[in-house]
Length: 593
Ligand SMILES: Nc1ncnc2c1ncn2[C@@H]1O[C@H](COP(=O)(O)OP(=O)(O)OP(=O)(O)O)[C@@H](O)[C@H]1O
Ligand SMILES: [Mg+2]
Image (cartoon, rainbow, N blue to C red; front, side, top):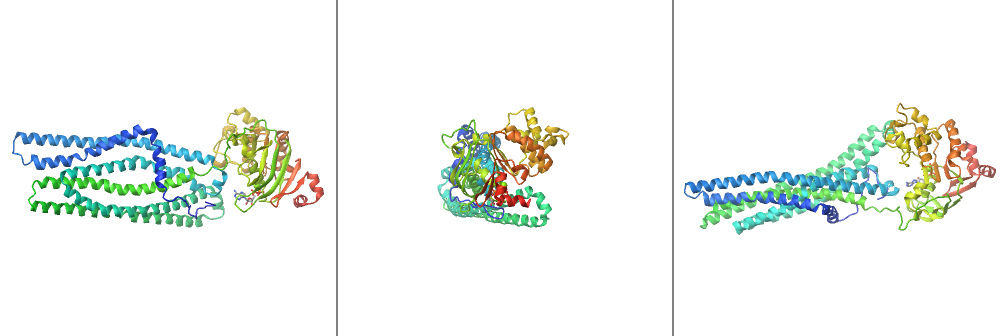
């Protein structure tokens, strides 16, 4: 799926694999098989006990009522009433226990599924996220997983027990009258065929409905994230229309499902009623033919058909729910099975004592197939060298850095740190040795200290504060009555852009990596503060290999080597003085400033 968005349906290319997904889901029961078995036995007992009353009633009508009035008849009647009472109590109480067990089991299993998908999301490479809206990913972890709970708590056991109930009722019916059993089964055949076709149509519709739901969620999440831009561009009214359309799309597919599904009940009722009529007709014919003791048998049969009709009707409802679960599972497992293309190789090397030599050897890379951002890119950086990257917007500066940190893998060539291909070392050690200050700093909900400590959880408060002071970040904390303990909003709400940059700068200072990457790290900081930072920066970067992307001349001037990135590679390279003397593109850039 490439570049999916809220107005595009996700295409899940899984055909007829729902059984495989159900198998995977059911395999999760294995560790809890004893508990599951107990719940099953309880449910089976209560369901089978429910089959006894018609048998007893038949006996009362056929055997006890015709008895002569007297003590024996009264004793028999009392016995039957007590037996029916005990059965009534048991069938009412047992479900409580099995529902409790399955409720707990269901929630334990869905917690595991949710954990699995969340852990997977933490591993998936950037291009997975590049191609999918956040809302379409988040709905899988939340809504779709939630809906699996009902599968365990309601459908699974009910489905198994209903099958049992129907089989047991058939045995009872066969014992009473094979002819009448054949009549009721003749009515069940058209019912099964109809339900099969309805179910097939509904399954397709559910898939469609899931896609529409994802679209709506993608739009909601995007609207929350872009709320300020929406308001400032007066898009609220337009967005209301977009939302209405997405909602209508989803509602339309839902209504189709409802229309198809609602056919289940009348079809089932019609078939059953036909069966019961058939029983009466055959019974009448048999009585006409001289059959005796038919009254109790017909009553018992009518009761059995009603006992069977409940699981059969439930069956159709459960099949519909299973279609829904299957549509959810497709999406959940699409994420769980997505390939983690960027991972530790076998026998990965742990980078340690990094000196900071970096080599890009004939690298070619593009985000999309056929569109290269870098071609035959060669760069060799000695330990401790300060490299500045400049160049037009969209030239590929951030891309160069993303390849070094292995956010993406090169298509051709290699990127090396200290002579090790970045694809041969553990991601953890690579990213531990490289500190990146992103172009768009991300602040998490939490205190200022928590945010500074984000990449170095073991750091003490004092170390965090010392790091913050080095780069003038203490003035950010000073603004808040709680100082460093002030809790920041999500995405750094409540901080200015420059303050966010200072805070993420403190993160890097504290992490103290061997290779430092600053991507527009000071773009939002005023020049006066930047000068102060500059002095600290000189100290922090001393002896470290660094890559600095900046537009401000003051920041790049001091670099050992300046690279002008353009035309899918390095257009010019040299020190500030050399490049100014050359009077090329770097010179032109400076002249314009
Ligand atoms: N995740 C992505 N998926 C697809 N294309 C991308 C992605 N990120 C960047 N690009 C494209 O790759 C090219 C290089 O982008 P890059 O972010 O490296 O530019 P840059 O030099 O850092 O620009 P700026 O100065 O604006 O930060 C651009 O054309 C951009 O549109
Ligand atoms: Mg950039």
